[in-house]
Length: 417
Image (cartoon, rainbow, N blue to C red):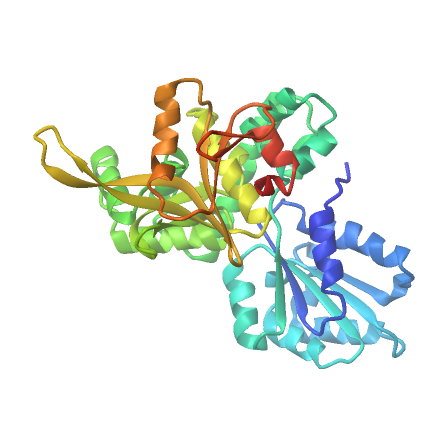
């Protein structure tokens, strides 16, 4: 099933012939190759680009073994260019190309080439390209299917689609699978045989049991503040072994570089500064997270929070976890400082939104809990609570916007209400 991904297609169209290497990054199996070799190629063919002026190379297959040599690859591309007209060069999984930076740099020197590459590992792509090409690498990061993309291809009711999505996530291949058993098996198998194998092999990790335990801990702790010290203590208590803070930090970095997880920094709203401890980690795809835990620990609020976080990233917001310090009194009447949390502080340019995620606001106690942080924020940026269900947006007497998860996910401008 070919799913329209207009958001990313438009980002590629905007970057056509801009003199830069377009780098499409994202977790493996999220649809990078389909975007480039089917959706974007179809767009080019429909806009008067000749088929022989599109040069496609897929580098992770055995048939491309010879083209992983940099000289062979560059020679092949040059040989395909029979005239002075513009050629589109599409390279898939470019990290398999030896010395790919040199090949791409050489292609940049050709006046009639527009280059697009995909890759599944940030350290070997966006960071190297920024360094090697001094601003001539242009990254387009793509995610697994957003709920909107998933729902457009699902063909059923919202509640059924939501149940599928919150359980199995948004990897495109799942839409062609019929049974729950097939989906669960697919997700568990690719987590071990593709994602974890890539991380372990690429980084030559010897402590395999330790990094697997780390992934389990992070999967169990989505939506909860954590840090390497806390993880090391958990490892010592539950596994009766040692796992140093330094190694944990390195392993978390490897998981981030492979796009399996991403972190949200903690931001002191009143102090206008970042707090370096107790970050939150979220999975790029909740289905992979659930598979890692064998589909146990299905906490709807935390999973919904993870989905909201990913959605905000796809909309190009920067996203932090907000902290508001307030004065209060303990049982003895002594003044103490307390930290209240705002799930997300989202920014784009000068615009900011404060967002709480709650399964429901059915009781006054729950309402006060969610409103309390907002009431102590000393500015007038919009404050939004996203709840479960399908309710349309409305405003409270205090000016807070309440909207159902359905409205938030199916309207890209939902925060503008």
